[in-house]
Length: 132
Image 1 (cartoon, rainbow, N blue to C red):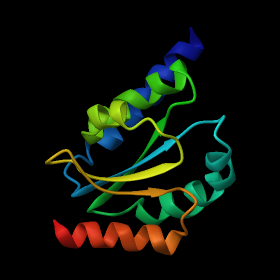
Image 2 (cartoon, one colour):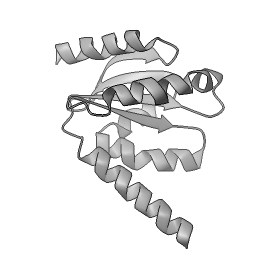
Image 3 (cartoon, one colour):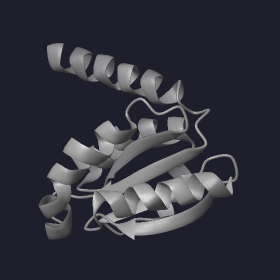
Image 4 (spheres, rainbow, N blue to C red):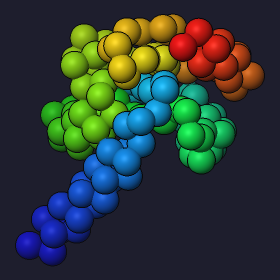
C-alpha cells in the first residue's frame, strides 16, 4: 500500500511539473530503453548535461520516453501527455533518438541521435527555436 501511495504521489508530482510547462515552445523528447546499448552509453550525457541545461528554460522542456517495457511506458505516458507529445511518442518508438517537437502544431522539427555531442544538440534546439 505504501509503494502504491508513493508511486501515485510521484506520478502526480511529475505530471503537475510537466503540465505547468506545456506553454513551452519546444519539447525535446528522448526515446530510450534499458536494453539499448546506445542509450546506455549516452545516459550520463543526457542526465548530467542535457536535462540540466534546460531544467530552467522558459522555452524548452525535455521529457523522457522510456520504452524499456510496459511498466516504463506506463510511467512515461502522463509526462508525455502533459507535454502534448504522447501521440507522437507512439509513432516514434526507435530508441536512441532525440526528437525536437513543436507541441502547438505536433510537428517534428528535427531528430538527432543521443550519441550527438551536447553542443550539436544545443545547436539543433536553438535552430528549431529560431524557426518558431
